[in-house]
Picture 1: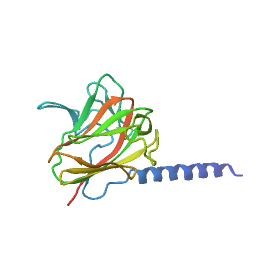
Picture 2 (picture 1 turned 120 degrees about the vertical axis):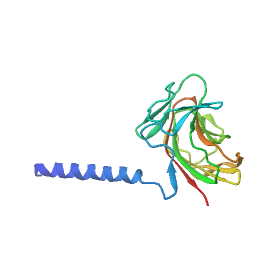
Picture 3 (picture 1 turned 90 degrees about the vertical axis):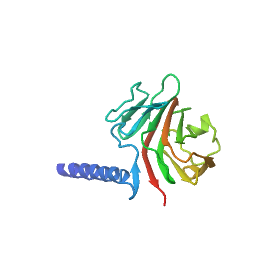
Picture 4 (picture 1 turned 120 degrees about the horizontal axis):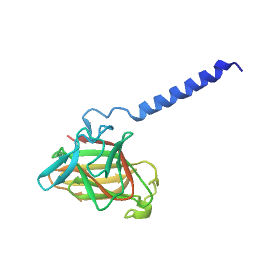
Length: 192
């Protein structure tokens, strides 16, 4: 076998991997907003009462509970519960899609305007222990559709919450509670 053959095979394999990566990171549909730019925590921060500590241009929150790394928001274990919120508010009906990966027994949350949807290592930490499509320690997709003040929430197509009542407006939040959690591809599309 000629020496150059190995180089050609290597180049083809690397090229296929790069095209797969590009397809995975495809641009969102028109009208969809990326809530996370994949590089830093721009657009996110901690809110306490009327004050908002912004993390624009920063890769870590001030207490290092949240880190932007390799296209993900990593929720790091720490002391107590901490919530990261979008600076933007969302008063219109919308569809929110995101992917998460939970470490064993990790406990986090997704806030939809204000109410919290539990995002956890469901089969261990609950409350949705009967999910059949949940993939432990792998990427899972949550879809939240908000219409008329009610949110319908699914994980990999299975219903988590059928009619979660939400306020007329508010931001999107993530919770740091127990264990490591990762979030990526946080995308919101307003519905007509």
